[in-house]
Figure 1 (cartoon, helix red, strand yellow):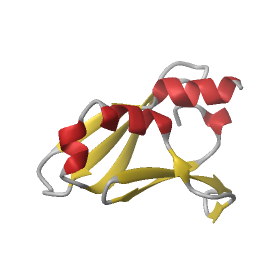
Figure 2 (cartoon, rainbow, N blue to C red):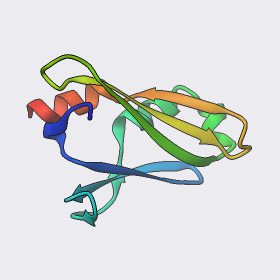
Figure 3 (cartoon, helix red, strand yellow):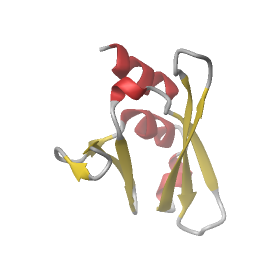
Figure 4 (spheres, rainbow, N blue to C red):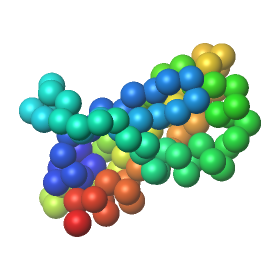
Length: 99
């Protein structure tokens, strides 16, 4: 995990948006879905990508160092199934862990 203190999350994609769900014990949702700011900022910089729609989202987290820190990226698949947009999530997750 990129920032274990941030807790487990799931990203859910719909045609034009990505939502974050907080998980409890990796199975139970504990609150309403909300916008995921790091993904929203990334999509804002790639308006043409969002305008064609989204099909799926995947998370790629790589642990680095003994402190458990690391890098997390969301890979957004375009509705056409051919384009992928990579969004850096590490800063947002690390900031949440410190809060």
